[in-house]
Image (tube, rainbow, N blue to C red; front, side):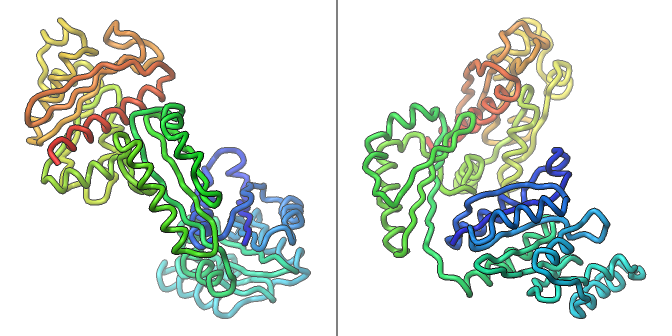
Length: 416
């Protein structure tokens, strides 16, 4: 089964908002064996929408459209659906009742004609009931292709995908199985990882494909198996992951897309009943943001001091001004002191500290641009390493953040 995803909205095309809907829909469809062949964004223009519909008619099994279902004049999706299907808009009583209850019962204000117009839908469409908003989803079929229209508001779209579309597709269509397994590696670049696993990759069965998904400081390896026998696919994936682990066990930190390094670290800290804090300069709180984003992180992450300026390192963290003057803020000595100070202040088992020149110009130090010192205070002392992550600035910050977590993870593993 093949699908196309279309997002409608000038705000996407001019970069005013980022299209996150397509990614969510694609993942949801992929999980039930629907192959995504194309994702496009088009303007709120009737001709562009009609051209897109014609392009994919009978080329795919389902076209999912998000956006353009609002009550204002620039939302043209419903009228365009009517034109494409030679239909007309009619009031759907159930939708009108829901909209009225939502506006008058929940928002406590009189319903307007614009609100009532949300209940106008093509007369032959199947309604996808939107319990969390006013714009219903619409399911219509022409020849061999189903066209589905969803609101562009992300939480409304997600509700309809999860509660209406996925169950309906599962009920009405036969699909192959698509099994994914993502292996997360840290510490080595894409080319080095590829070189280490070349023989293993060459011996993968034909129905399993490998994709390299590199980011600064990490490479995700995604295995995808397609076929009709789910048990056979899962066993093949499991066997090949096991053989891969034997080759690169030293850099594998987790599995699946949600098993990020910060998630892995959280599990390790929770298991060992240990805590972590951070004192960040050049990373500007990025490490703390990743750690605190993990559900349940309050059990082990105690806080952070973003000591970006030199005076903050002295006045808040309590570093000696003489230490800063003697060695400069970008130094082994200052990084080590930052880690020890925040560990002591927040009473944690571990503490990460970063200080460096991220660029594009030098700050309070003459250290070369791209230089970063990362310190990790542990129950047994302080580990400090120096790196040069080059340029541009964002690359330095990203790599320093990932490298800090990598150092922490390897140190915790020593006690597991």
